[in-house]
Image 1 (cartoon, rainbow, N blue to C red):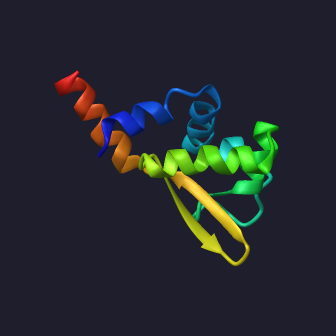
Image 2 (cartoon, rainbow, N blue to C red):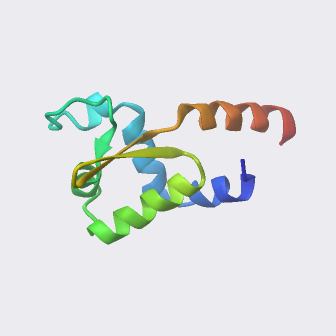
Length: 98
């Protein structure tokens, strides 16, 4: 786990907001009709954020490189969800090392 990459990813308000939304997908994306097992469709995230698709894709890419989210491709759609294991490791690291 690259601590610098993680903290860079967390240093943006919108990226933090996306992570918060993904924490409770049922609450924050009730309009998603195909369930939440694969995560949230990038289009739903883009619509909620009110930003361009390219900006949201770049933000999600930064979060994915940091290990904070994972993605699954289903046909033409990409779905994202939080990587809770990374959050657990990060929490332990902050408590013990920082």
